[in-house]
Image (cartoon, rainbow over all chains, first blue to last red; front, side, top):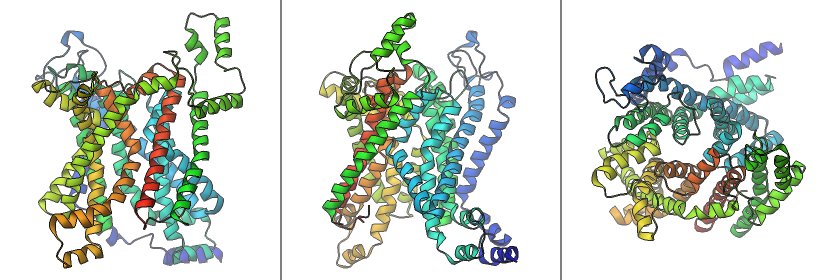
Length: 292
Length: 314
């Protein structure tokens, strides 16, 4: 009997499963910039997957005879101070920057959304506890805290991901909590609750799908910030350890040769900015669509 | 709650927050692997010497006593001694404050000079080509890392013209100013995009409000309208935004000081991290956290005092 009632409520009460036509028109009405952004990120993702296959040379092995070569047909963007092919390093770096950047936004999103959903749904002391911790984390300048954490746990992608998760979850928690407070009192949630649907199911099936849109918009721009942060940390020598190719550390390596071999510095910056633009366009496009 | 009661309460709430922050900074360095005593004594020191140093540094005391000592010191402005230079951390930090202040002030000025006119202009000419151009500009601005912008300025401006130094801080006030032009420009450019976007949307909100419509209907228009009706009402939003951006500002400073080799706080923190100087890292982390807490506090109070509409519910 109860099970029956639950399924009835879920079938009728919740606008969580929009019919296919609505979904289709949602995709069709996405602004052009959303699709341009998706195209850019898609190309980078393909490059990341096939990086080693696309790269004409070994990205790490030094070739001192050919050091600091100018762009030519054999080395399209020249070689760096150790004679490594810059194009090969750029391509392989895409793999590292895109993966770490994506995960650097993904982990905080999962942790923050889970904690924020708990705070918003259960309220009372759960809310107070989670939000007090959030206040304290937010009082720290996130990036400065990351430097301290890198200092404590050592350099590397793992540390950076842990540090991002510890500091950035707060934003996602606040976003989802505020949305849940708004939705919690709405009729269909009350109905589900009255019907005895378990809390985790109400959160997962009825609340999150209706509150997640802001989070998705924030996530796409957050990937950009994560990539920028990784490049910046590598630039100051606290990010991805050498000799792994990474855009930030490539820029750092080229800095010394800015006058005569400017492409060493310009190329990784351009690669990073175009990818960043892709994520910004996706985020902007989604945002425009949602605020209509 | 009255506005002054709010201010007092806000001030009192800071105390427990500060104690937790000090505790976290302290614990963070406690869980860090590696033996500080070994670092201080040097690699060739005998085990007895290391033990002696450990005793001297108070590392043999129970953790709670160490925390008490550290907190007691911090309250009196004593952050311990740098393991590298053997100077008090507070002096090491103090010596690096001036360049960072110059950079921060310069960067904020540039950011305001860029974002205030562009943000408001874009809002007034909403959806016209100006607006489109400004929005694309700020979109590109966000995607460029600050250190890369700095290097591009060196490459495109400093190297060909020779007008500006490519790094350092100089010795006199005029030299400081000369050295800070490109770094401040870099910082301003990296702060602007977010400010432009937020100024644009808050200005649009103000322009749509009833009293601006009334202002228009009594014949106030153009620049006077912007000056008297719009700017004043976006100040509160701008202050809040600047406060929220403090964390990003500090990080940009760290990066830009490294790019232009400026002997400021950010470069000091990076050096301390690469030299594994525990007390110095603690000092810098604490200092930056205090700055953020302080700026939030000031922003809240200023907003509560200048704008009677600010909701006071704490």
